[in-house]
Image (cartoon, rainbow, N blue to C red; front, side):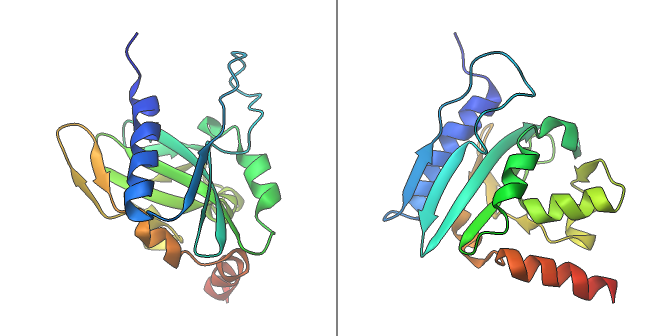
Length: 168
């Protein structure tokens, strides 16, 4: 049985994390295979640790130019961890048709929802919201991504302050 693109992307993310951070920790949480899409037991796909920070990372693969929030059943769980100092929670989204890989902190998804949006749009996300464009180069099908940029992610309180300053 062939792996789907999402599972292949998860495997590739793990490999590229090790390349970006050779002396770090990454752990793939076991998938809940009960078949209930909206009953995810885990808060994320991966728990990672590098340079004094813990990352809870959910990986998603999407065709088209928008990632609908309805595809993120882990939202509440990720958000519940977002107030912990030294922990970064978010989603890495691969837009397969656009050859783009973004890191979207869970606080950004919260802000998008508060603003009445229902998705992360690849065309406008970087213009108005705190989203990191992961440096990536397309290989045949998949992206070769450099995740070292994740060490520059603002912490939870800084992201909240970022949005507070934008509304003043």
